Amino acid sequence: MTFPLDQIFVVAKQWMRGYVPPIAWPVTSAILSVVPILIAFPLLFAITTLLERKGLGRIQNRYGPNRTGPWGLFQPIADGVKSLTKEDIVPLTADHAVHFLAPLLLVAAAFLAYAVLPIGRNMVLVDLNAGVLYFFAVGSVVELAVFMAGWSSRSKYSLLGAMRAIAQMISYEVPLVLATVVVIMQAGSLSTVSIVEKQEGYSGIWLHAHSGFIGIIPHWFVFTPWGFVGFVLFMIAATAESNRSPFDLPEGESEIIAGYYIEYSGFKFALFFLGEYLGMFATSGMAITLFLGGWNAPFSFFTWIPTYVWFFAKLLTLIGGFIWIRGTLPRLRMDQLMNLAWEFILPMAILNMLVAGVWHFMPGGPLRWLVCIVIIAIPCVLLSRRLKRKKKFEIRTYSFAN
Amino acid sequence: MTVAFFILALLTVAGTAAAMGLRNAVHCVLALTLGFAGVAAIYLQLDAQFVGLTQIMVYVGAVAILAVFAIMMTHSPGPAKPAAYSSYWILGGLVAAAVFAVLAWAIHSDSASLQPLPVQPEVTVQQIGDALMHHFVLPLEIMGLLLTAALIGAVVIAMDRSEEPK
Image (cartoon, rainbow over all chains, first blue to last red; front, side, top):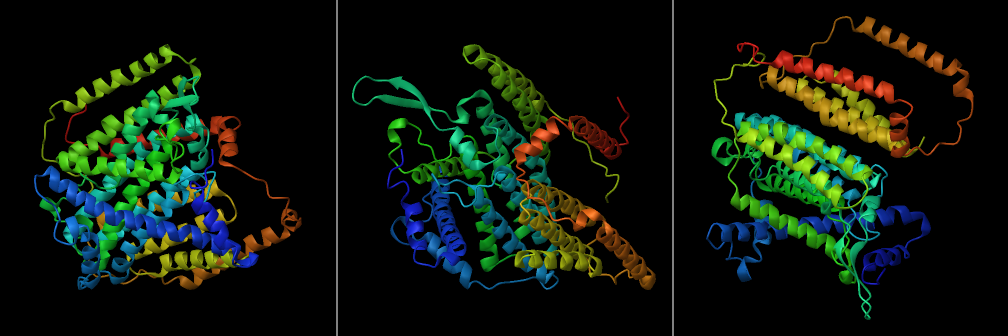
């Protein structure tokens, strides 16, 4: 199963490590593992900004960037140079230390999440036995960075944006974690590597000819009722966590201009941008690891393609989905946002845990599929009808804040 | 007692000390968060992954956010106010020293601390889960009930009063 091209990076790391004395091996291997991540994902960020602007341009019936280089390909470089040479403006009354630290903390926390993502076979920085827990623990630091940015700017818009962002992140963190629980229940492990290994293998047909076994349905968790529901809920919550449209209220250009990073300029602004996209890639990577089979190939006759290629192909597909959704859906209202989280996604996530239990204890076969689909479908319809009901709005009075 | 431990201990002590000494309430919370993170890192350094990560998730992700939210709601952002140093700091220092002395004496005189440490057991998250689900299932359920009651209480307090209960 292991092909030379698949393990080329692992072999290259071993080979490069061979040039230093054994006492420096831990440090060298750490550097050799971290540096590619520090290069690859910001590079992916640069590509994504271009793809996003091009894609949104197409959706909105315009060209998008097309002046720098052929087809506007050098646009990310131009953007980078621009943000580096721009003046760094800090408001006079801002809290300088916190204002400076906020973007750094955001980017550092975003990078930390990549430590447990298995990018390919044998290609994970650390295989913690509480890997999924680590991922969410690191993710919760982002909220603090957002608060620091919003508060230290001493601007009403920043503070409003930060309050919105934190309220949204806290609300959607609960369903995000609960949507993950089904996978942990089924895989029986919190380690990302063993979750991916549990999704290896295919269902398919035997051919007597030279080709032998052909697997067409991979054993990914998304191809089960609980896995599919978990994946959809996870992606909705992930969109909200990364403050992307249609959940981009914290930025809300038309209401609060740019939210918590309005007072940032130049490279610090670029760092916020980077941190936000890195967070989106990391949650997408986690969704791939948990539901889409990690680095596994979709068909058994494609296993000759290196595993890291599959990981990045899946990641780019999800990014494409994010861009498509951003170009398609309008922004939600604040009350719709909260109602969706607490009245629809959260009950569905809890129900999904029940479904995962039923799936585990029922014997395999069509009946199991039917029972699980019925358990999901009926509450889903009822809850969404409840959400659609017209709500009366009144002026709110606050008991403890004025 | 490695270099990593000393760095983390220094970070934790500096963070918590700054939390007491700084003048701005938000700075205090941020410094305290640094202390929490330092403690979490010490847990992780001792290979207690579950405790360390839960410490980050609960204290950095929830408690610190709750504290800053409370400050944002109640304080208006403005120039820092003079710190509320107590005039009883000599008395306070004496109490702190006495508590430290008693604790140090208790630990030192305890026979358990003098015995050599047993071989470090390999505790995985799975074992913790097994223990919670089999041996400690009743305390876990009671804790869950207590937290649910607290949650309902919080909702009742925050509920709109002008509306008549239906």
